[in-house]
Picture (cartoon, rainbow, N blue to C red):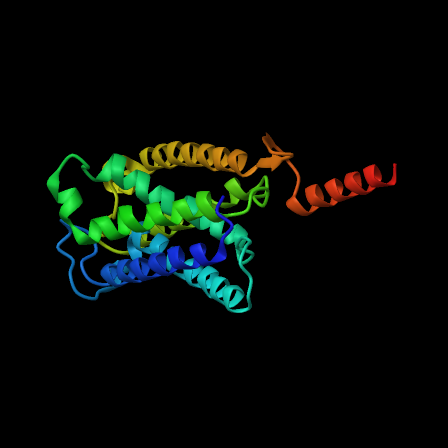
Length: 243
């Protein structure tokens, strides 16, 4: 973990700028092949766009606090704002990155790498935001239920798309695994279940990573909050000093 707040601030300024670009791109050409261009209501039906909006908002909140702390003279520390939402958003944008890279896009084609929209929304911003978690976030702050909470918003999104599909005649589903016309509700449910299991598993792997804490110079899995750990260590040190 990098504790230097100035380094975190520079990284997050770059992240916010690229995230802002990704958000602007969602309002133009939404997805190659749909024929949708210009500003229409359809920008709100793509999970990619919604997850990028979450990334932008969370990144701005975290950066604003980061800048405030640096200006106040702090030099070392970790993010203290919207930490649960930040973790949930990390899982959200990881879904965007992995689903596009594995199921929807073709990373072996030139178009995958040459499209500014694809790279910004599906690759660059997601990877930078995920790396922010691994590089800068304090260990021991992710709750045991947070990986489960992280799939709530994707599930709401699935319900939202199902409602749109039922309410709008000739609705074009944004992704093949949500296309009720092709798969039926049962087929969609199977795909959703598979994706949920995969991403809950990834969430708990990240939760385990979060529990890796350096104690007396050694990395250990510690299932306690940092305040409790430091408090107990202080008590142990005091006890040793009294002997």
